[in-house]
Image (cartoon, rainbow, N blue to C red; front, top):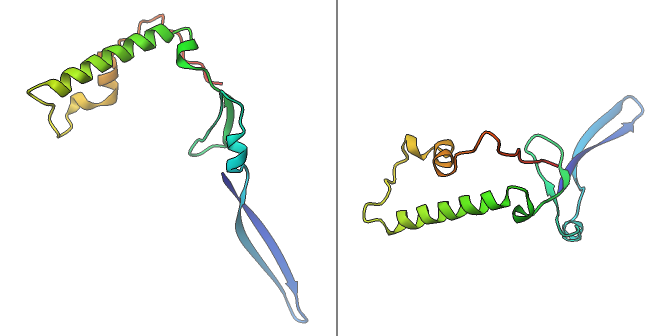
Length: 119
């Protein structure tokens, strides 16, 4: 991971002073350091924010792990049925292809569903 650092240099001559600024990339975390992160830890990279070091939870260890497993099973069955269908899905996206609609159709979220914790 790289971060930009500005370096300013000044030169003074007999008649004037010159100032220049150069932007350099400097390594913040090396690949070797990323590899040495303890098991279960990761770095979340946001597009417009600073990286976040976080401890991850395996999905099957979460309180809603059973629900996740059941939803994944339903999705796998639906995908297999689609792949084996003699009438394949259209290649041109339709309104039904929006992610929100697809997820809602596969696994409606009960009102009492736990929030996904973000650490």
